[in-house]
Figure 1 (cartoon, rainbow, N blue to C red):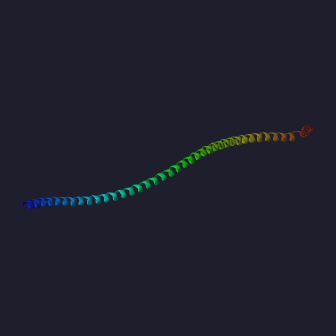
Figure 2: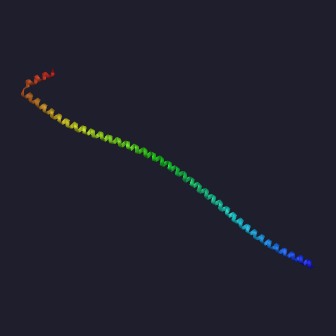
Length: 150
């Protein structure tokens, strides 16, 4: 009987140990379930973060492509602006040359006016002298004219 009681006590203590192990296993099972839930949540967060990262990378790629297009467009515009500036300088040179020619033509016209005025004065004086000559000595004029014809 004493042996059975000892065996019963041993079994009770073993049952108590097994109950403690069972409770520990249940707690571990709960902890594993909680950690699996956290792992699933973490995986979901990671998936969303990867999607966000991919979205931002695509957006950055679009922005970079847009910036490259804009930069290329700016370079083309800079080249056009330089070409237009060169053309403007060429036109300014041509305008300056045309203004110089205009000034020369104006001076030539002024000189022509002065020359014409002087020539008209001389012509009028000669005409008046010839008219006086006709009135004063018509035969001398005829002789002079016949001399000129010969």
